[in-house]
Length: 235
Image (spheres, one colour):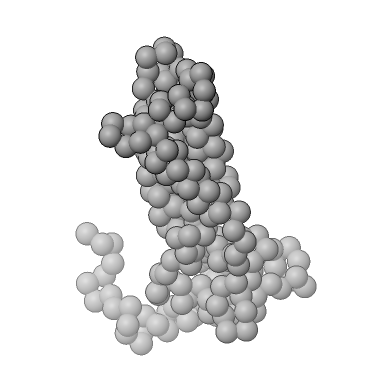
């Protein structure tokens, strides 16, 4: 059951008239916005929990691998490299989840900036066309945050420190049990892959992570200080 009458048709003129009356009546409109805000806030909290869950997995994995890798001299160093790969996978998953989370968060911020904030201070209008923006987003839900920005933001908050710890631990793991530079490169070998190649791949990978983390770009995710330009596009 949907809870709607059998003759309910959102496209009919009658239903549109009812919706228009609700939008025109101040008390009905504010009540409607209150319900909408609670719904969007619930979705935001749900997706925020999913983002945090991936972060928890990455932290637990990092701590577990480091504890195991340094528990004995016979532990292979490449286990830490496997950990780097797994944390990178978590980063990709969390970047995708963050993009979905930002859909609901952007709506919550739009309501907070233009309904609740203006109720407290009517002079501080942020967006005069906010109802049009919200209506369009409700009809055509779109992802506003590029994947690269989502990954960069999660790197800054969580994953860059985690990956730095893993790479640093891998370097320490190699040098602690090696007596010279030649021994370090020999110890870094993984199967038939020479140590020089392994060190070069890890170095290029970490340099790429730092580049994505620190690369300046225009922010697309909507935050407390974000707005739209003259065409209504998100800044």
